[in-house]
Image (tube, rainbow, N blue to C red; front, side, top):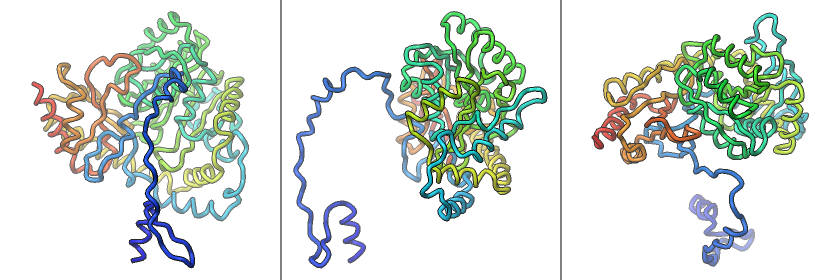
Length: 427
């Protein structure tokens, strides 16, 4: 009886008055639902509005979820997370306010990690160069707003991370696509685009890019960095997949720069826990100061608890052990999905096997109706991500972004068969 009453109360159907009893709530009046007046009040949106991306779509637990941008919970360090929260609860972090740029110890950790990718002879980033942000999405908006500004051009790889496209819209910058493939962008095209547009910033993911999985060769990194320097511009480097190397290590371009041309974004959210939205922007000179001012205006500071927990986790010896286990599991899952596609879905072409990251970038025949493929797959309980969401301009083909880090990898072969059938129905 008590459980039933608690359930009804949680739904707002009953209310309990101590010493009196439990009563059925009065049925609330139903409004007209006419919100047409808001159209005039809101006016024209100040930026391009996007619907919720497929990567954030919630699905039933029995679906084969190939759409998500996050790893399966079993690939996360749950024990470390729980222990870190328990320890943080016994400290002043529960009631304390951190310095505006972040906890000094966490700033030092991010700087030290980037220092490991810095060759001899190049001045490494210092802890002061680090600004802690509430997740990478907030960091992207801050970087675009502080370094580019509304109405000014920002170069983006195409295809690129949907979150960067959304952040660019929020910041009001003018997006200029730069074609990029499984090995990264063409530096000559990048050079011409800088010259034609007068842009002063280029957003890219040199390590395990989403969605292509590209890992820049050191020679390409040097050429891109030289191009950025030539035009007096910034490279906004997003290293969100840093912890997901499989057959190669990440190669931060920021480690090759000591004159402030690279602004480096590093997030812990996907590898530690979606509940711990902690990231860092590393920048030098006036760029760092502008980023800090924008961060203060947007969020004031990041929760002391979350920063304390994040620092606790990444400084535990078990963290490195966990990352080695994740590398092995990602390789197994990636290869399972690749094998399923090769045997069950010959119409689906994966042009490059990624050395890291969470997903495959798969090309479909150019004649198919991509939304229909997505719909047919979803009807069969296989959830896939439409590649159209990853292009800042017109798509250059029909693609699916398929996450191999999700749950139920034993179902990948069957999911590939569903995708093939959805494509074949249009032949």
